[in-house]
Image 1 (cartoon, helix red, strand yellow):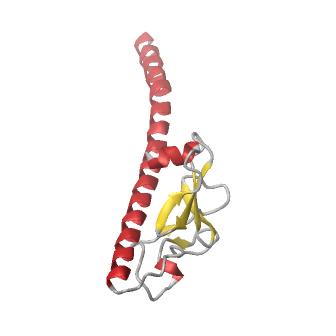
Image 2 (tube, rainbow, N blue to C red):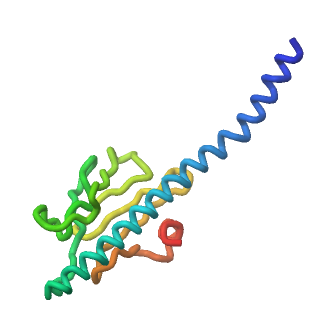
Image 3 (tube, rainbow, N blue to C red):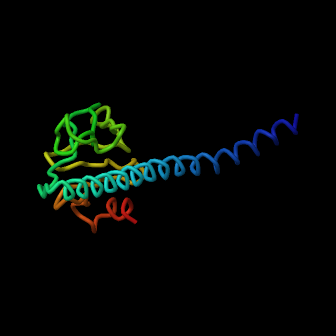
Length: 148
């Protein structure tokens, strides 16, 4: 019987150590996914600008498509033109509701907000400006975390 109690105590101690580590790992995965999305958007934006220059079209890209609201597709078409070129082959879904974290929301015509996981907190607002996808406040902690 003492062996069973000893095993339960050891499992409890291991669980107390492992559970916080797994929680942090999940948040790291969410941040890595956001970084990957940002890199993909920037790459697509750069490619689209080059295509437009080769066609003699110097019109700046004003937004990356998508609708404001929850559960909507984001980063679907350049300039919101559903017949134009896609930003991402498979658009990102916006947050499912106002309480969701670790997801994107369109917050203006050319603004996209990433809501950080609860352990980090805050949000990073990205804007489409001068054919670039940039963090609005590069000195904020969420922006630093996503852009390093």
